[in-house]
Amino acid sequence: MLHLFRPLKERLLRPLGARLANTHPNTVTFWSLIPGLLAGVAWAFSGWGWGMLVAASALTILNGVLDLLDGHLARHHHKMSPLGDFLDCVVDRYTDVAILTGIGFSPYADPLLAHLAIVATLLVSFLGSQSQASGGGRVESGVLGRAERHVLLILIPFVQLGAGAAGVPVWWRFTPVEWLLIVFAVLGHLTALFRIREGYLMLRKLPPQESSHD
Image 1 (cartoon, rainbow, N blue to C red):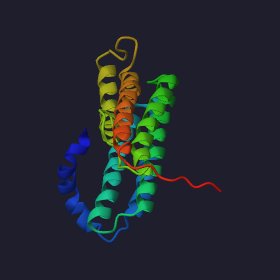
Image 2: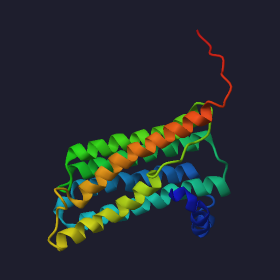
Image 3: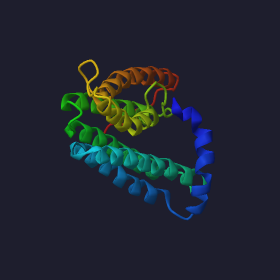
Image 4: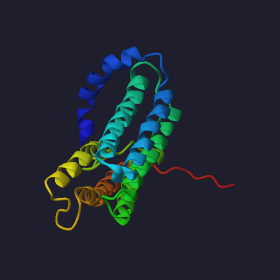
């Protein structure tokens, strides 16, 4: 859903992109992996104090900015390349898994819920690119894409901190973080169904291709 705000995102990134015009997008992609992995570490050690939750949110923001910036640089100052798209997908998946795994090791979530969220997240990402790999276009439909997940991951540490400060660390048997994981799992699979449908309708219009056998 948030991909509809792409024109606004491009305008906001323009000043930073102009200053880093000579930086290769793949370099930015690799740098984005570092805060993504560290965000997972911060979540895993969030039992040490509220500062780790704030750090997890800040590192997720930094990862998101760099993730947006590499695409902006490729579109406006360099050439788009299949390699760049591949590397971006690889780094995004490692980041997704790192953050959700860190949440699973945190004192705020059941590891099983984190596992279910990881499965749904990877399925959504896979279906987004599989249609393109099969000869169609990239599928971005659904209610919970990566941008939406990223925004929620930035906000949830403060929701969890606020709930704890109010003396309500658990809402209806689950912590706020666990509710987020449930949302990821449920809406993730709903998004996957949307993308299966869109990919099917797109690919069924393509002519059949001859297969080669060795």
